[in-house]
Length: 139
Picture 1 (cartoon, rainbow, N blue to C red):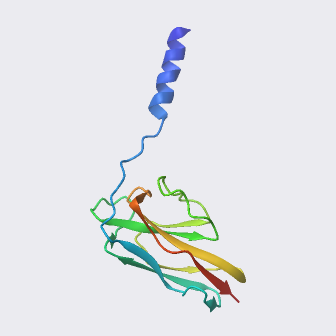
Picture 2: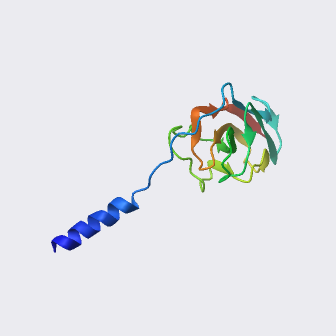
Picture 3: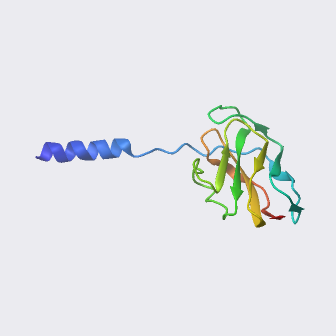
């Protein structure tokens, strides 16, 4: 009986995920939304273009210094910037192939958009490289 309890505890401890060390961002790195502009009124589908200065874009899983990939936050609060970003969430859209543009089908009305740049493992760099949150209106 004691052996089973110890074995089960060992399995649980082994299955606990370990988190990667923080990936540093390049000094002065900046991510931003090129288009649409903050406050713009647009018709759908909405093309969103991503901008990045001071770092490079690489697909998820590729380990290269000063690189990462984009995550677009749609109509949601900024996620915790010390944790891995979700990758199957409709509010956090993952661009793991290194994409720098997307087309969104948004319902008419007001929407917010924000970019978070993350490392090969979907964890925001430290210090975080995050855009301003913009608001657009879709006709």
